[in-house]
Amino acid sequence: MVVKDSQPFSVVEDEGFRAFVNKLDATYVFPTRQPLKAMVAAKYAKAKEEAKACVLKANAVSLTADMLTSINMDAYLAVTCHFLNDSNELKTIVLGVQHFPQAHTAAHLAAAKAAIIEEWGIRHKVTCLVTTAANNMIAAGRELNLKHGVCIAHTINLMVKKALDQIHGLQELRNRARKVVNRFRCSTTAKVCYIIQVQLGQPTLKLMKEVEMRWNSTFLMFERMYGEREPLSAAMSSLQTDVTPLTSAEFAVVEECLGMLSPYNEAIVELSTEKKVSASKIIPLMKMLDYTIGEQISHKKSNHGQGAC
Image (cartoon, rainbow, N blue to C red):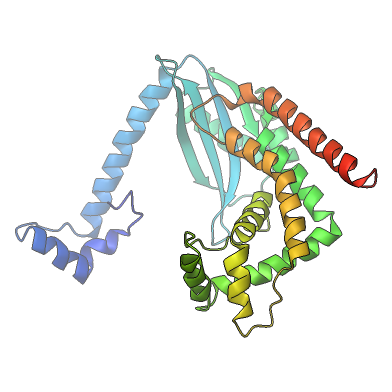
């Protein structure tokens, strides 16, 4: 329970939790915080040994690595191992998520990754290291003398985000949409929208919030707003607010954006699955994206003239 639900060790001292367990079994003797911590540490050690034995059976492995930032702005290095087991099933095991307080230089990254590789005994089994296209990540791969690959999903994300950020009119529309979302997500008046959804026979869905660093959050925000445009417009017309709702013309722009972004979102989702070898999908996905976007552009030109884009 502590591991799966991310509960603190102090849960065993909470009055309500103790009363609940006591109702189930009055004879149960609660461990204190320290014995519980030792129990979790023992389970971790056992799980790690089982994972290490599984990895050591593999003939070859590939690694993915990325830098993560906690809500407290602490940096962590995550390294994950991918391989095929004896039954040719794709397995994924997290080798480590380590606190990384030092500077994110290639030398420091290479040293941390080398230590994880040695700890798991896979130095001569690593066939490829996949990271973002950041210079320090690429240089770290060279220092480790490993074949390096750039994450195609990350590359697509950077490409689409850069394109979105360069469209001035779309920036204004995104700002307007964010204000509408914030008005409903941070206020009890959102209930009005949910009531209207029920009256229209629609599921009660919350609006999605855009996250600055992830372009697909823009897609998800637009997708949800467009799907809920009727109850949203009805709710805003009945509220006292200085937030201006999107017009029908602006929703038409949103619809067009969704059509352009949808193939990229589907490609990202497909590349993010863990149970299939994603490298084998790259060429077909790139061909499909090229074909789909080309068809969309040709269709718009034929309908609206050569000035359309």
